[in-house]
Image 1: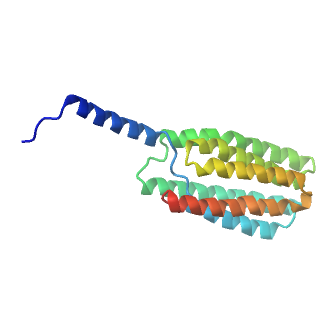
Image 2 (image 1 turned 135 degrees about the vertical axis):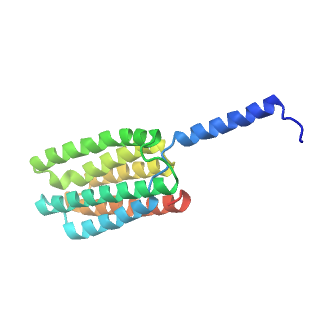
Image 3 (image 1 turned 180 degrees about the vertical axis):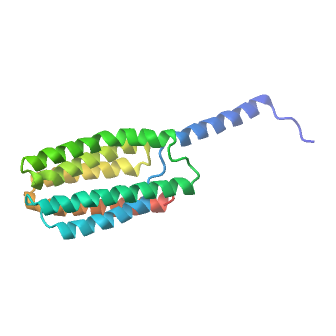
Length: 194
């Protein structure tokens, strides 16, 4: 038999275990890197199909369809990543992440209706990039460090989209929802488990 462990050694080990468990429980780690890449690819396709946002009902319809596709991709990718890591999908970090991300996205839905009703469809790229970026920047504080950085870059693209001629809106949509998703999705997939 070995010598008994000193009580303070056992206590330190227990505290370390508790601290590590709490740190893991506080972050949402099911950000789907490969899902982000696929969303980026579908956004590039939407950009190619939709054409410029010149108050076009077709442009809006294509991007709203892309939104629906991206939501499905994200949900499936999050669920798969959570299942692979044996993390419960509806754990506290996941619900906290969703609660922080949803208000800016809801604001985007409301402003989409307002912009479309007032003939400002060609200004929606700046609005969408700004609110999605805000959502990623705030929700990302509960996730891996790259997510808020991506959010800030989306917000910077929104400023450029608002300053540029409205006919360039699709270029900014492709750069943000296509390019940034592909780049950051690839980095997340490589460094944070898919």
